[in-house]
Length: 444
Image 1 (cartoon, helix red, strand yellow):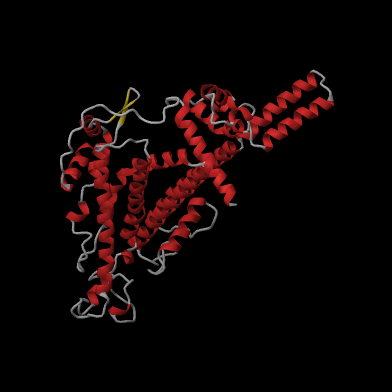
Image 2: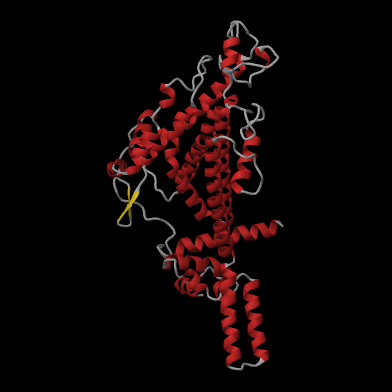
């Protein structure tokens, strides 16, 4: 095992050395760089602060680099946080915690239940409003920390949004096929784009102006004012496109994307269903949602049934309920059609290579039958096709690689055929015929 590992390591080093020496753009036989004759100037001492300041002033990033892709992933995480939890915190108030007017119970003291919201009758019949002074054991400290947790998460995600604006002002763009790295040009190009307006709107701190997310006990917050954060959806699209390009299983990634879209739509629809039920009155009729417990999962289940149109749901009673169910059914039909279309196209793409291979093989079989080729030769041709497919080979490697530039084609050829040439005796002595060896590898 150790010998095998050493052999693999030595082979990798030999390939790397060969490509560096004789690949396109390399200088044959050049092993060391020529010494510079330019006069050396004494380095001026620089403080750490000035170095960081200089880096900030001159730093740019190329959109084709890995670190740019990883940054789009970070921004996408912040977007998904707002996409899922803004509407959920607005509807399911237990995620935030009770306020001074949202702690009521049926048949129990106010400090025993935190999930019942006071109705008008309960507020009218209350002799004393429940407050932290009267009921110090109501768990206010626990809910205070819950709100503080959401406040910290909001600040972190908003900080990512602010930092993303800085990254956009330093992201190079293509102009006549060349990457522009001039900071002034990059900043001007970004400021003149439509996305700059969306980015500015997405960071307007409406929630902080209105008092949320600071954990005050007397204020029922409205996280829905954070919906402007969803204007950063272009970052998610960019991240998904780059992930699909980098993925070795793009079809599986597309299936996951479709499933993700469905989950998000069902989640938002469930939140709207509970919101409408709360406005009508929980448990007031057979259609609206029941008592305020176990809120999220039953709503998600109901939303899944009505959007997929595969299950029975309670019939609506009021006009608002009829309108909501009608819109849901229409959206469900569109979602079902989208799922069928996407899955069908993905299956077609997954079997496209086999279909093309089979069509070519059928054409050759028809040609041999028309020309009355002997059965023995026909079986040899069919076995050759079976061999190609069993080894995951196409009919022509050149047809696959022709979309790449000549330099990349040559480097791929060197990587693929390097070991084959090393087994030939005349190429085993440190590549004495350097240019000839390079030509042989590229031609294979």
